[in-house]
Length: 306
Ligand code: TUI
Image: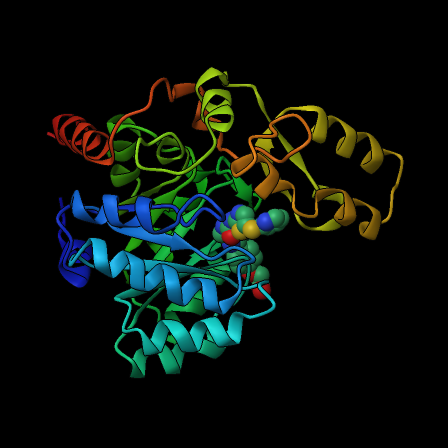
């Protein structure tokens, strides 16, 4: 395997843990980093004060490099960017927008910037803006997604930029990782499989729903208002899709999902909450430690790549 990403970040394996809102807090991020991957704290909609606390708690658990995922629709994004720079975090990944305005500050603070992109145009723009790498995320992913599949996105992004490309979306084991590397990626980002890691604080109802999920059990809501989100089918997605079909306003739909991810992850309400997960959920069959997950994926990927 090409070693640009592991060398850039000082990690053992080119595997990022997805920066999942409410899920990816210090316990998970530290466990992934300790096991040799890149653990990432997922900011989601949290305030800057929470992010600072999480960064400090992660540092208490590991001396290894870890990252923070800055969700750019967060109303406190500016303050969180300051916090990431001040705390000397090794790497920031960004989602759901264009991180161009934070690039200079991050570079000056020595923070590597790895935007998550869902298109070739955005990948090119990020390379020009000074990104150190990009995560190219296919629409198989859970959460907020673009339109192109990983199979089509990765080779096109890999041809378009010369910085390293990390593949995300639909990767849950060593076969997926090997396939992504053959498509031109130099690393992978994995979310759904880490949802059920033993170290996460995710409610057991959420974990069991991911473990029970089959290949066809995800649904995309919000496509009509420009914010497509993938999650596991339940009462919430059925209700949302019914209202969306009836032409409900953006505000009405937003009101319905307000706080719904927290309800599922923290409170375990997997009926009326939003259970974000990727299409690879059907492959995720059991809880394992982060170390077991990383070692299994690396061993399998290396075997296939040989
Ligand atoms: O960001 C994600 N996935 C997310 S963010 C999130 S938080 C949330 N919670 C509730 C409802 C909605 C969101 C949950 N999942 N993935 C990275 C990602 N970024 N996917 C797609 C994009 C993206 C989209 C457009 C990146 C850039 C972009 O550019 C638009 C522009 O500004 O030009």
